Length: 383
Ligand SMILES: [Ca+2]
Ligand SMILES: [Ca+2]
Ligand SMILES: [Ca+2]
Ligand SMILES: [Ca+2]
Image 1 (spheres, rainbow, N blue to C red):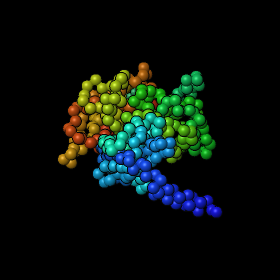
Image 2 (spheres, rainbow, N blue to C red):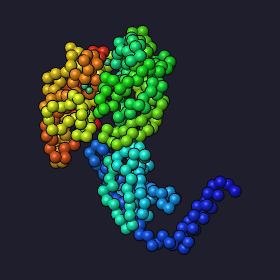
Image 3 (cartoon, rainbow, N blue to C red):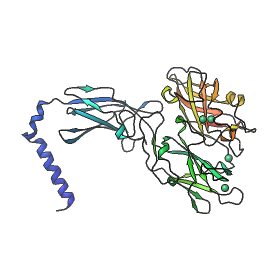
Image 4 (cartoon, rainbow, N blue to C red):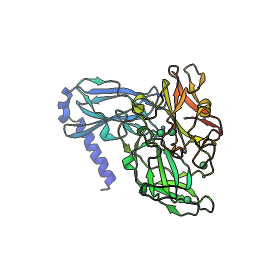
């Protein structure tokens, strides 16, 4: 008998069993349900077609019941026997590229908050704010023969790699990365650090340091591949989860200037304890660049000219867009030497109108330089 046919017969037998009166004892138990809303971050727009599965061990058997979210993001999973459930949210086929997550907003199944469903009970507000899958925003050749590793090795090159997710420090190993050079040779980094961006809320950048090429005579670094397993989480999510395969990314030439790769709102829970946070303002926006940031052309920490030029663009519920000038720029003086300035700025913003949605960050050209002294082009970043 073919294994496919055998599977079909077993499936048929299970169907026959479930329909037989032998299991009618469970008719006395009135099942429960869960319901909630699935949205996508940023902006909390409702998402249709996310498969919501409630799973539990029921009388020694693994039980799973699934339902898809509707156009308004609402879902209801009914027919749940009394048990302690784990709820999984998975974007359906053809849906957006959203990371699978578990209640409550964790990509790690072991960190899921379990929900007790009792007989006849409907547990509400089991919501999910889905996040895009992890991706690499940028890899930029920063310096040539100018930096070192904690081991003492000196005269090395660096390539900051920026991710859409926080990367768990303990999951970062040098063997996780490969640098493909223009002559086809492949290098491993000498070290891979969360430095200069080293704060808990700055974990989106991994700085690769090693012998990657020569800016004068070549070869030059061309692409980065992540070959090992990294763990991460979207900013604000609970629990670290494994990051799946990441596509290869090209390395920006050393002569390019820095550019904005991400902007997101620093919530109180993320921002708590930040050492060089905004001392003023009501809303706080993290702006991450592809490379380290100092003032152009001095190489000192940035000052008033940068603060005066930044704008955060917000769309209001009435459709209008407002350009908000920051009261100040924070996350300055990351380290003693401005050469070690990281790739983050925090915009300290005044109170924003209700339900304002971030749609962009702008800054004029020639205000910021990277560690190679290259100035920025005018930025019109859209998250
Ligand atoms: Ca070099
Ligand atoms: Ca550069
Ligand atoms: Ca910093
Ligand atoms: Ca900084």
